[in-house]
Amino acid sequence: MKEAYLYEVISGGYLHCYLCSHNCKIKEGNSGFCGVRKNIAGKLYSLNYGNPIAMQVDPVEKKPLYHFLPGTDTFSIATIGCNFRCGFCQNWQISQARLDDKAAAEGKKLILPEAIVNSAIRTRCPSISYTYTEPTIFFEYAYDIAKIAKENKLCNIFVTNGFMSKDAILMIKPYLDAANVDLKFFDDEIYKKDCSGRLNPVLDSIRLMKELDIWVEITTLIIPGENDSEVQLSGIAGFISGIDKGIPWHISRFFPNYEFGDRLPTEESVLNKAKEIGLDAGLKYIYLGNLQTGDNNTYCPGCKKLLVERTGFSMLSNRIKVDRCPHCNSTIPGKFVP
Image (cartoon, rainbow, N blue to C red; front, side, top):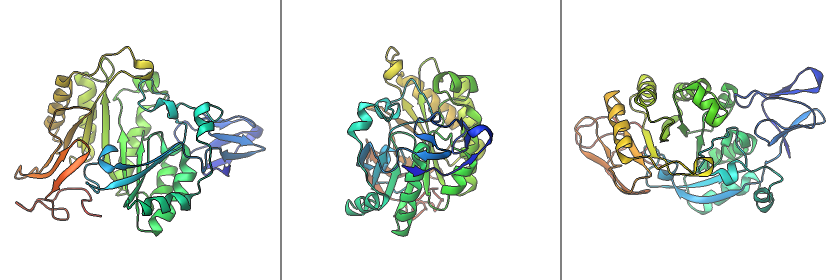
């Protein structure tokens, strides 16, 4: 266990955790909503510190990040737990596990931050991704790793639901280089119903990350009957466009899973319609995910020439010169070289 960051003692023996936007007030002996931060004798402890449930090398395109170190690998880690309860979660076996679950017991081994960084260096990964579950709920572990990673000239990436607090973003900012944020819906009631979350804290996180010059890409999983309406998609596209038309938007196809196992996969035509909505909103970089077909290459918004060619999660070629189109010298936002 490690004493948690970002909490304070309040009256009645409660601890106020302000790591994420649930703002849990935790009675002695109890855990917060995430299940991995516990009030023990008047101190808040992170119970999953040094206990990764998943570690592997992934292409950075799998996060997905297309404008941040494309064509490189990223050392990816997660612990169990999440501060959302998404019924459509693709990694529910670990995100919805609890410390006394079998999945947790199988993964229980102490791996200190230095070892994670050494593994990234050994596998020649220029970045570490905190992913698969929700990095906010293993913030202490991620923070300590990120500091050491930065000392070793590695980049740090959060793949997140964006429900962290402003304090958490400001604290990790010196070490966080990029984030892919899930903007799941554009309706607060659906966020509450499907995720036990809220919309506005996610929007606030995206705004703040952009203000702090953290590279941001956004993913939306299109779920039939939940967020596939024109109102929802126009709301998401308009929000992104209002912040920065250069933010890449990843529109991903849903497949039945977990509590949404009785749903049908998203029709390809719905994803194409979402892309049209995004283009109409002025977004310059839109990518379709979880499709066998589709063009996920990057084109210059100025001269329309092919710049980055991809197949699946693999980059075939990258013609961008640092951050410029070699044909018309337009600026292409992102970080394209290590």
